[in-house]
Length: 220
Image (cartoon, rainbow, N blue to C red; front, side):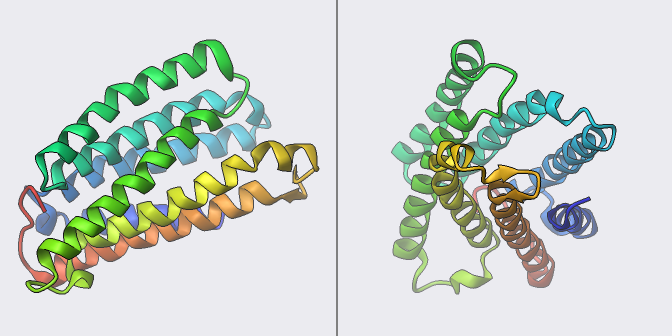
């Protein structure tokens, strides 16, 4: 198992340990989501262990779409502006359509769906920027931003997908310059680092929910 898997697993364990403080909150949805995340990573590891790694793209392609839909749904809940809520909601079916078209006509099943990830990553970065702006404008004088659980979730998503936009836009370059070989896989190295940042931010959010000793009702 790679190091970033343990960050994912720790985040999942914390979501279970602090379950009662996440109850009736949008953060509660992270419990089944992180369980699915850990399960997918384990299945992917099994494919690699049994040397059938080239056949596991469909698993991560499907999960990429599920992951982006999940985050978009969270933003649709946590945005305060009604228009922003609608945009995040409409993004979900649009992403699914893009994913299906990519599967059917572009990258198929033999490749990782970098086009879908790049498209979704762009919107995730925009959603994060808008949410942070909205949060600063509305809550700057009411509560310390660093004590708000969804603030940390948003920061993690922002850093992860900003990095994804950059790294996936350079994917073809790395492929053509032998930077994706088993002994020199720069893409995999950066992706794992981004994963550690993402799941660390989730863990901080769960710890804050427990520390604050109160329930965060929808919307956060």
